[in-house]
Length: 508
Image (cartoon, rainbow, N blue to C red; front, side):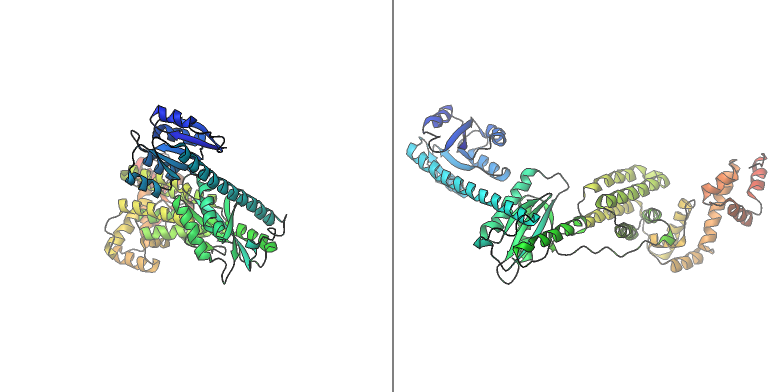
């Protein structure tokens, strides 16, 4: 029995329709009624009727609006019969454009209604038979791919020159509903199975296509990709697809399937726009350990308000993790942790911008929702650009770059600063920037950095701090080295300097 929902604002019509024909004799059963469109939309997901009989003229949302809404939102979509008390040609024409199965005028003619019901029943039975055949075919395909069967049974429509398996992973930043997956699967079936181009099946988290070659090319992978894109586009989803390579017979399809599964393990690294046939290439940019850790370089690039340097550091970080075999979640966690740490450190160095920077930092949590490596990098670079926009001034010209360099030294002198790292952050070669800096200040980079550190050390010693504490706080990890540098620039030891300043016990 096929279920029926009657939607009409007139109680007499609703009840009259229940008794006007012998519904069960015609293969139908009226499961419920609704007095308006809103009530119908509430009941529809629960009842899942195969046929909806709806009145055009209703208060609020009329019958045609209800029909459009159901067709847009529900899959599988029920069949429709339209009721109207008016011989309105425009309404009838609109109803036909919306693919209704019949247009009945009130008072309803019993024989006419029966004729429509019988026609709808025939079409529903044909759809059910087709879906049963599709399920049967899918089961045979899965047995073939698991090795339980050696062929699809020798049906003529599946005799071909070659075969190939393609897998599809649906992608979205939001959770994908099962109903949406089912709709895309049905759309793919319409585009492939019903025109003899292939078959659709489910394989765990993926949708699969069994493509067959009937001419000079294997159903055209580009054409297949286009059809997949159309189906996913109708449902507002992105996707990635891979192909396992052509095989000469059905018995070899498992090889194509296993190859496609192996390729799909790298789905996070694939871009869209084509069906992928090979493993993605790992970026060959290597992180240079000589210029400091990646996290330090990222911080300096952000502090220098240089988006290009930020992007370069991020890409090298990602390349290093990929080369080490990092998983999707490890990549995301690494990027989020590094960017968040750099922004937090920047907030401490630039307290006047702390609130703005923390707002940007909050955006890093959403990076876990990205489903493509390229998109993840784009989002990270975008955050870096936003930070640069908040920090940057006009950095053009050598003099301004030297001023920016001096600002970075004073702000970060306690860190493990190196000329190479600053040069990268500012977008210059280290040799050029070193010459530029000495020309402008009269001192080379290391001398200037030492003097800034010693100047801060003198302030801390005057506050009575112990020598080993001061050495660590201004950027010297070796206390003896700090002693030597302090004596070189001040002319006395740190202990003697503090004694002169405070007259305290010099025991360390």
